[in-house]
Amino acid sequence: MPTYLYVAVGGVVGSVGRYGVKLLVARVPGGAFRWGTIAVNVVGSFILGFFSTMTPPDGALVATADLHSFVMVGLCGGFATVSFALQTLELLRTGDSTDIASNVLTAIVLCVAAVVLCIVAAMLGHALATLVNMAN
Image (cartoon, rainbow, N blue to C red):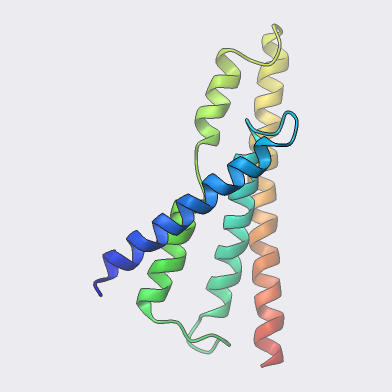
């Protein structure tokens, strides 16, 4: 099967997974707008950190280039999202309050939190995979 089909199938799986997370988070009061996006980005970052560490040439998991493309490009590309940029713009334009300074501060806090959480998730995925690799 050509590599682009692995990417396409991974993208479908990731996109459907993202939609599922959106539905779950929408059940939480006040959670649908921002927390679903942050959740998929954090989980996607964890998967990237874990999988990339598990699958080097000397890793516990042997992965073909097609499997890498499926997981790293397709699955994570379809699952994680940059829609936080649009959500941040919307927050700045319409806001949660009439106080523009409050909206700007909220937008900055959400962006910083999302980036920090994603980096921490990638680090945790890397750390877990390193422990698994050491055990094998």
